[in-house]
Amino acid sequence: MLILASGSKFRKNLLEQAHIKVDATIAADIDETMLKGESQHIYVQRVATEKAQKVHSDNQDSFVIGCDTITCVGKRTLFKPKDAEDARRMLKLMSGRKVNLLTGYCVIAPDNKKSIRYVKTVVNFKRLSKQDIDEYIKTKEWVGVCGGLCIEGSGSKFVKGINGSYANIMGLCPYNVNNILIGLGYNK
Image (cartoon, helix red, strand yellow):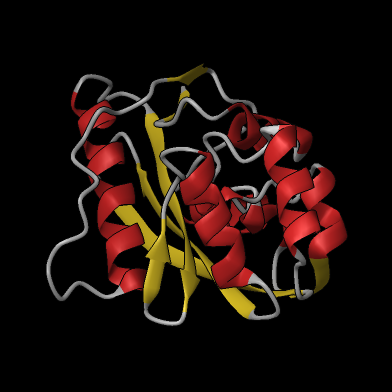
């Protein structure tokens, strides 16, 4: 059995589009607070691992995929916006800049072997006007989205270029997950 330790429909769809059949999705309720002094790439790997371990503890006969994505503007880490003003603040921070999107992965096999990695994608944003931001906020696409910008929606018009995995921006890179699964002995 293959379990995705996430409630994200985007992540499940990305895997299934790549013909990686997910048998179940289980959102792992963990504390996602960033630790003092913790680097961004260590953070996403730690949180992904904690999610995978929590779900695997009750599903030890399964392969479990845990993942976590953050948006990074320099040393600032952007999570999901709390409200429209928080989303507006994030969009202003990303405006006209290159932004890193990091996704940490942890896959745990039934034999308790695990593989932990992260993927970075760099997104180059156009300079956003007040009108751009106001119109985007009205769409509510920012709700529940890391960094407050949904690239598969109207936010795509703000992206000048991408260096890395497009799918990673949506929270999961099927290429990397597939390679991890193969390395751990998963047979579709």
